[in-house]
Length: 117
Image 1 (cartoon, helix red, strand yellow):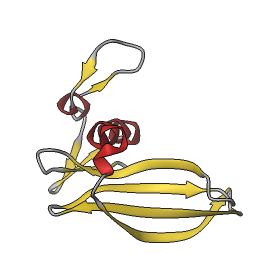
Image 2 (spheres, helix red, strand yellow):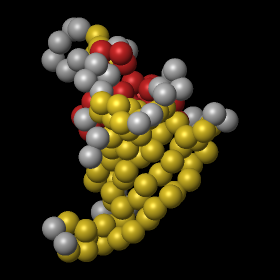
Image 3 (cartoon, one colour):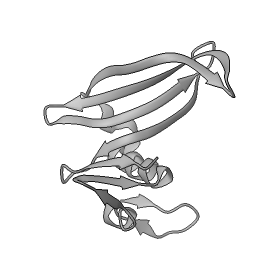
């Protein structure tokens, strides 16, 4: 479960997925919802412990069409059951993370939840 911001109400993953859309056999949610699901599944970062990290894409970062000197990467974190998290990360020219969000998260049931475009 994850605490709702500004309230004492707890949201479960099921609550967060109530507005999910299914296309074929894939489940999609809005980016802000996926980030909440990812944060809950990551357990404050400890959920990444022991996972294998694979960079699947890396390219120079841009802002409004201009190179920033940083890097934009897509990183998969996997365990014995497959991909657990797919993260989109952008760094600045000195390597500081300036943006990070979830592109996909595998929840406890084994279902992969994807970010709606």
